Length: 216
Image (spheres, helix red, strand yellow):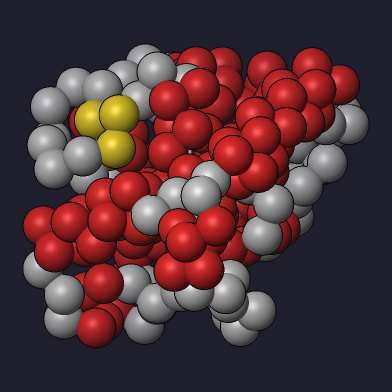
């Protein structure tokens, strides 16, 4: 499958950049207000590739969330940024699969680390929320990672309003997207999140394809 976008594109909306700038400014204020001893306890931010999934390390999801909460309590910059980005779109990060909660902390951090400044994460949560509201299926780890990869790779080349419209009409919503990714023959060779990203490209391009090709 060709992973190039075929829909007319638009630049990153100025409003999104303004929202991100305001969020960064708030995080900087929190960072500056932290006690010196708390700042000293925060480990330096990693410069390596995005963090590996908790599943790879064998960590239990509850432990990942507890560790994240401890980092929040210490005022770690990245943890605060991730929480505030989620809160900005009315999500809560916590150990719950109820509507409005995100339990996939490792996936949030993975997406954040894609660009290191939160743009991919903000774009991912904004798009998922506008398309599907606060459905718990929309923030499953493979969906978050898949969207993060998609937006990171095609940063500035996506017509966001068109993408939201396509997703809102996707058969079965986020659960349907995940099911389609799981059924992909490539799932035996690549990660589920990669299959999600490829399916997003296919869905984005499908409306411009001839009817016979869109169904193939």
